[in-house]
Image (cartoon, rainbow, N blue to C red):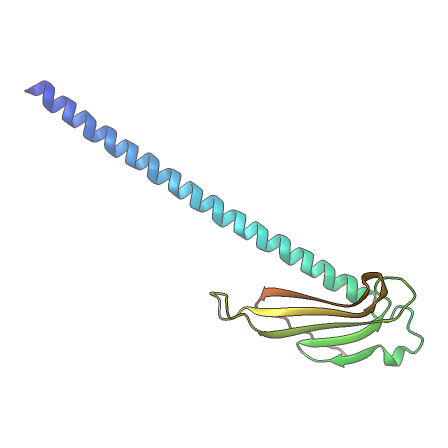
Length: 143
């Protein structure tokens, strides 16, 4: 009888150890997925910032009249002139924050749109939308 109790007790302990191992595995997988999602968001944000910096650096490039560079300057919308693709044609670059993303679980997600026209290198006007932006604010300083 004591042997059977020892076997049942050891099986229960082994079951608890196995369940702890499975719980630890689940926790590690969830942690890895969360970290991977955070890294992806950070990489996408870096790519977006680099694109904005590139366009802003080309603001007014090859434009003859510097007073005509800015077309629209708002807190969430900017339109300016510049030769962004360096093809000799003055492009109009438009960055604007659109409406909310209805398919997202986050109610603050909005669409950031970049439109370039005319972009001869890309065969005409191009527009790129980036969903998942929660905030895009521009501040302007005078001289």
